[in-house]
Length: 326
Image (cartoon, rainbow, N blue to C red; front, side, top):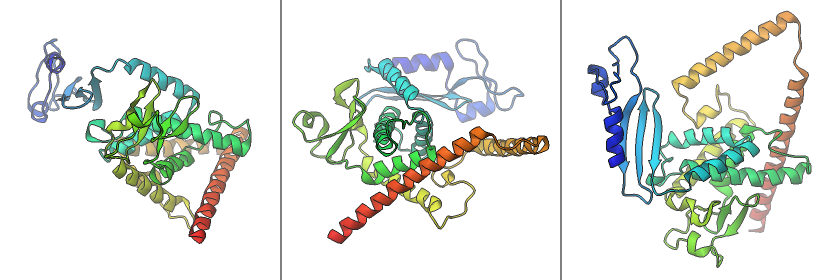
């Protein structure tokens, strides 16, 4: 509360009515220009909330006019270490960053991205993606040999589908826990050394995620809506598969079927289309063909998609054999 009061006094918190009518000044003497003036509104807080009745107290605020959400937590000494750990993972796993952006927006658009309301927070989501990439990398090595690596080539669309399939359909939340230490592995939640921390008798379906910086802490303990989130992942996977499987369904954007596009996204899409057209015109007028590097990348993407199809066919055969035996 003291921090929230200090932030409010320093920056001011404007309501919608205030931004439309008044021209307030904060304690630092900075004028906050309103929407009725010629100049845009300068930085200020449009939202401030203190969440104290949680395991980790939070002060949440939004910086306007950019709508940047910021959470300040307390009694969490491992924050800088966690950030440094994620920086190392992002350096060694290039797909981690774009997958995090897409999945964070996917969760936020459904309001299941806040830990204090039972959703999946940023740290837990990143650990889920890291674990997925670790196991996926091992599959690539088994399929292609030691030269395979997610750091040299990857298909983000294929990775997104496999992530949604894993956590929406394949992963056993009741019996299995996740660790990203030592290149990642799964462990039984009911084992003698793991049960006191990761097994919740009243909620056996909870996602057990070991904190790599404190193996006695369960990062997934607060995501009590994980069953609903699992169903959301499954629905998103099946929706995407309907547009990438034969017979193909025509659509302007496959990803827009699970992620609502914003106005900024539409502007970028139009800008990219115009840029591509201009580039094609320039190349046609100069008589240059496609770059050899582009051909190589297309061949690599085709190989990656072919491996993905093989894995899905193999999984389909396993499911069919199980049905026949039953």
